[in-house]
Length: 131
Image (cartoon, rainbow, N blue to C red):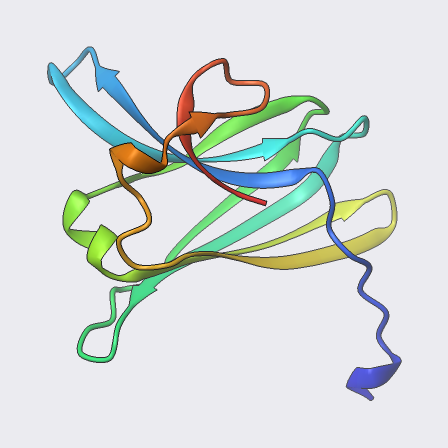
């Protein structure tokens, strides 16, 4: 049954973690974003995030976006620095037209740091990117 379901490969959709200034609280925060670098809109975007290691597991966070326009991005969540010591997964599902797409993005433990910063597509900022 499962083998009969064709889920195509996800391309041009990324997850980035960016360090940015929070004007409200006057702090530097790490925020996760989903980036749609496609030339089409994404519909019904579902994101499930969690962190884990051998000893610890975080609670599961879920977010739904009705639409993510082409060549745009949206904030998913604030990430506390204590979570960088864990593997952090972002399971993303969405519809492009009538086709469903699904991909799991993984930030391995300790890979979110200032040494790993790189240019982030569409955002004109630096952050840690998983394609």
